Amino acid sequence: MKKICAVIPTFNVEQTISEVITKVSQFINIAHIIVVDDGSQDQTAAIAKKTGAVVIRNGVNRGKGYSLKRGFQYAIQNGYYAILTLDGDLQHDPFEIPRFIDCYCQTNADIILGDRTDDLSTMPLDRQFSNKMTSLIISILTGQRVRDSQTGYRLIRTDVPRKINLISNRYETESELLVKALLSGYKISHVPIRTIYSDQQSHIHRFVDTLRFISVISSSLIKKH
Image 1: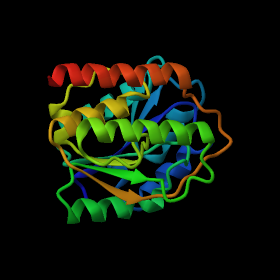
Image 2 (image 1 turned 135 degrees about the vertical axis):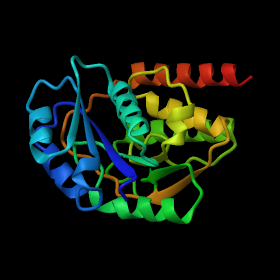
Image 3 (image 1 turned 90 degrees about the vertical axis):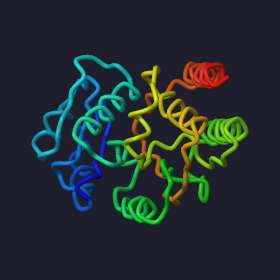
Image 4 (image 1 turned 180 degrees about the vertical axis):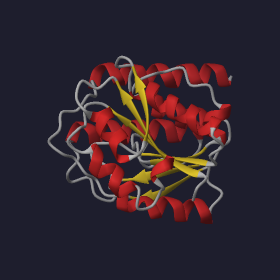
């Protein structure tokens, strides 16, 4: 357990970050919880630091992908075997962490994806469509079945980001990591998780992020061939 860390990218989540960290710490020691604050304008970083978590701050808002990469770098430099990623707004239920750890211990999967497809009733229709399309495209292009490509709730062997060069910095980074990992022969598995959507404002820009996703797919395929 001490060789698994949690990386939580955050931006203006002062209302929820303390609860997230407290719940995560029931499964992963607080010293192994890394909060990467992406230039929040509220008290997110201060609250996270007060809980005892490791806090890394971006001076300005650089994007979720940039924050994830900083968290990956920390995990690599500190010798962790695996990285659990989840959001800081309670969209991911920390009490489902044991499912990832059990799967990690029982399989040889390099990436374990939280799978929300059993119940999409609370997911906005545009997100459902986007998720189904991107999952289908990635599955076809990589030859591995991907059920929920847009989930940010994942457990990743540290060897994956150590060997894969990630060039994007925003929401498309999660897709870039997945595509490049699968094209490189890494294996995935899935664990069922709840679909949770709150009334917090989303920072995703549908059209722009879709274009970025297409760009990531294109560049990954070009470099593969």
